[in-house]
Every structure is written in structure tokens, then in C-alpha cells.
Length: 285
Image (cartoon, rainbow, N blue to C red; front, side, top):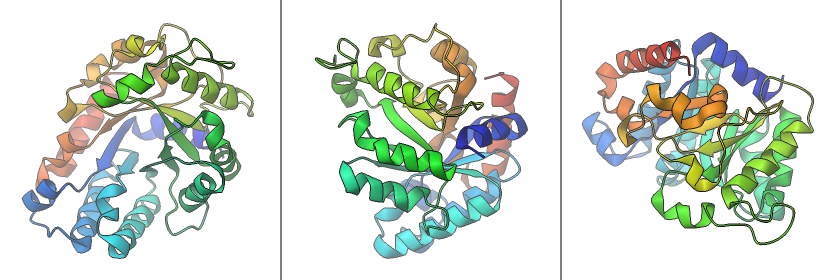
């Protein structure tokens, strides 16, 4: 089954909330956990346990595990395996990006069935051109996995690049963000029909997408790209505003929230996830 079809199944069964697994140092401290590989392991497994049965998607931020070296990666492997065993859809927030065999190797690490780091999808950067991630896109499609390509991110320092206009080639005159969307859409359209394409986009929920040359009034074509939308909760975006923020793209939006939920602590996390998941479902995002 394609990643897009599996994602549609999660939407139908458990809604669109994605719980971030971001063991910031201050969260580890407030949770009473050590700033170590054992701490992030315990944190990650606790988030998985609280999410299972309440929401359908988790997104571990790889960097918070990577900072503890090989022991941190061992902890991440356990968290990834536990999440997938619990029936959760796992998006590895790795934001890898490179060219040639290097970016292919990144994709093989995260998207190969049986890999120690196997996830259902990964975030990836394509600011060296969407053509630079052609192999990861093909690998994701072949393995029933997904990618979420950075297009318009919520960090303000990215605006200068993402709003810049392409000077030459087939996408000349489009913003970089819009050109990425067009190239991803073209790839998805070339695949067999399914609920969503396997290649999605990262579009920040705190942005005015029109500033990035993105028209949200146009209904997406078949095999539309799903949208991973960070920025809800702590960063200020409200779930009820998703239809206004994303317009015709709202049907594929994954509501991603991390610190706003994780701040509830280990005792309150399950209830916080349950409450937010119900809010997302009732808002008809």
C-alpha cells in the first residue's frame, strides 16, 4: 500500500494530529529525566505510549537524539520501533538534503524496510533543486514510504530563500516555494491514483502562504501532496484556523504539535493529546 493511502487511512481512523517527539533539554528537566541517551529514550517511549490509541502520527525530531551520539541513535531506534509496533505512522524529522549518492544513502537509512532507523516517512530539503532528491522520491514510492519536502517553513530567516523567484528553467518566475510544490505535484501525478501522493510538503501554519507565491484557492489535483504543518500550539497557530490558513490544501493537512502538548508533562500528556486530537477531529480539518 502506498504511503498516501496509508495516511488517508490514519486520517479516517484516528484523525490528523501529529505528536512531535522533541526531548528539549528543558523538557527532560521538567519531566525529571536526565539529559542523556537514557533520558531521551524514556521520553520518547513515554510519548509513544501516550499517543497510541489517541492519535495516529508521531514525529521524532532526530537532532535531539543525535546529540548523544551512538547511544542516542540506539535510543531513537527503540523509539521508532516502538512507535511502529504500536501502529503509529512515524515521520522522522531528519531534514536531510544533499546530492547524488549521499542523499540516496540518507533515504535508504530512513525509508528501507528492515533498516534500524526505518520510519514511514522523513522530512527532506530540496533547496539544491527537487531534481537532487529524485532518488529518494523513487525509493519512497517503491517502498510504500513518504517524503515531506521543505517548501515554506516557519522560521523567519528562511523567507529570503523561499520567497525568492526562480530565474531560469521550466519554473522561471515562480517563487522557490511554489516551484518546489509544482515539482512535487508533477511527480505525484505521474504515479498510480491514490488518496494522496506519497511525496508531501512542509508548509508552516504560522505563515501567510500568499507571501510565498502559493495560491491556496485552487483545488489540488489528483494524488495531491499531503501537508505537514508545524506551528500549531506553542508557536501560535490555532487548529480552528487551518481551513483559512490552507484553503483548498486543508484536506491534506497534518496538524503537527510538539511543545504545546509535551509541556503537559508525563502525567498530563495522554489527556492533552486526547483533548487536542478531539479538537482536530471536531474542527473538520
